[in-house]
Length: 276
Image (cartoon, rainbow, N blue to C red; front, top):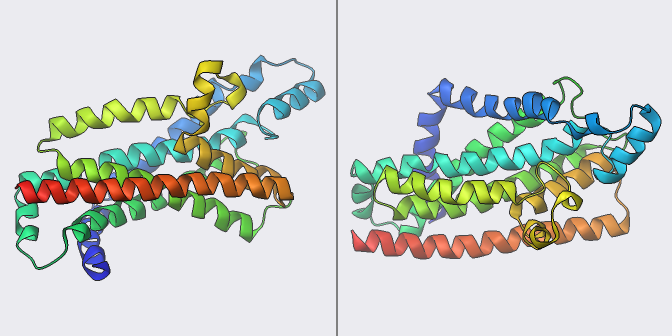
């Protein structure tokens, strides 16, 4: 099943790489969030004009980040992953409409390999755009500032978290893409899920900014879990034992989402392909 999954995923990746516009468009999305939203909606502008006290108050509210884009970057990566994983699944809808899935059904391969092929190609696309977004954040005005203790271990931890988050969303939206029978149904489902996930997360603002009734939802949001994990690694460098425990809990929460969505996606795929 593993080999078949990579072959199926590789087909879509080849088409994606041969279309430079799709790569550039996905990357520019992150730049817009960072350069435009990050500067025009920068909450640091609302603090006192006294530079010293303003920075202290800001860092206390925003997880110790030295500026807003440093706080925002993990959230933007999470949002870019969410939007990318949701809309990239449309290729599978087109495969159904064009009859390619019917061809795959005639092959002696597990139906789960069709599902995981979609997951693999979307994760690869998501990792590419996330990496570009991360490095763009370093060059935008008043951009991402890494802590002095930030090293290769922190960088690997950040990208491992990104990979886990993209896998979580890919497992969810790939299952939906293989289930629906038209692009209208797919985009309706995507829009129904994307905006609530985006705006109930701490991607843009810290948890303390949320009303009490929404905090419980925000705390278990996948983007919140991933953003908090990345912020720990970016802002703090070397982590304390308590911070390591917090990081492990965030990664554990994402892993639980991944297992649940994978099981759900396989079930949805089997039922959808059996019904054809």
